[in-house]
Length: 120
Image (cartoon, rainbow, N blue to C red; front, side):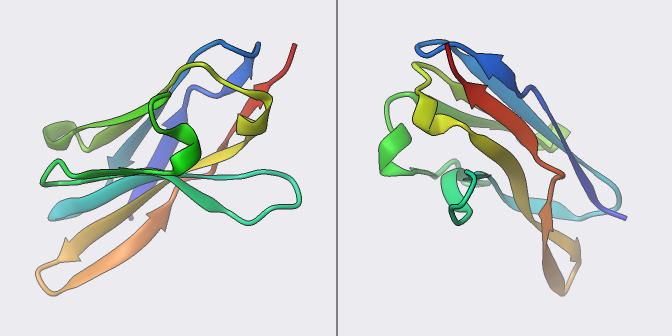
């Protein structure tokens, strides 16, 4: 059973920083992509940042220059460093991974979500 476990959310003042962490566990061959999504109240879930095994990264326009995604391939972990946080960054943040679970199949997995609140 593959699981993604997130940690690191919380309350922070505008301009502050937070670091989110995600760890994949269970039986798997490899983790192809790890990403962070977020969902604010009343809005659709959106991609924040993603990182492929090759090292290629993609960021949402609104977080470029403020957020940095990183991975430790061997540990199957993925972090999101968030700096210069704004109230608009308030949301539940979800870790997402595309994992090769057998030689012939890949599946999508989601973490349980962690709340990030940016407020003074």
